[in-house]
Length: 105
Image (cartoon, rainbow, N blue to C red):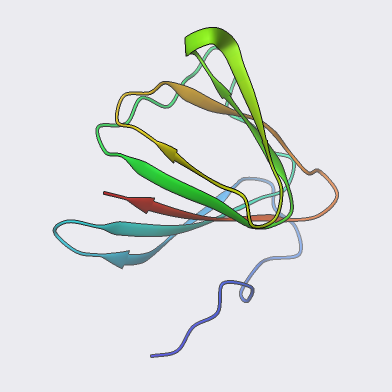
C-alpha cells in the first residue's frame, strides 16, 4: 500500500507524533513530526538500538550528553546515533513542522 511522509499531519501539534512506518525483526522505521517540541529538561534518550535519523523537512537541533555537543540539522541532514549514546532534542522549528525519518537497527 502506498503512503506519503508528508500527509496526515494535523494542523495543530500539541505533542510530537511518532508513527511506525515499518517493523521487522531487525529494523524499525518511524516518522516523527515535531513543531516546537523538545525533550523535557534533564531527560535524555538512552536507547538500546542504534538510530539513523534524517530531517526530511524543517530543522532541529540534537544535544549529545558526552561533551555537551549540539548538532544542527537542516532538511536532508542525517546522523547515526549509536546505542546508549545519550542525547536529547534541544530545539525544533516552532513555525513549521519538522519531519524526521528514524531508522532503528
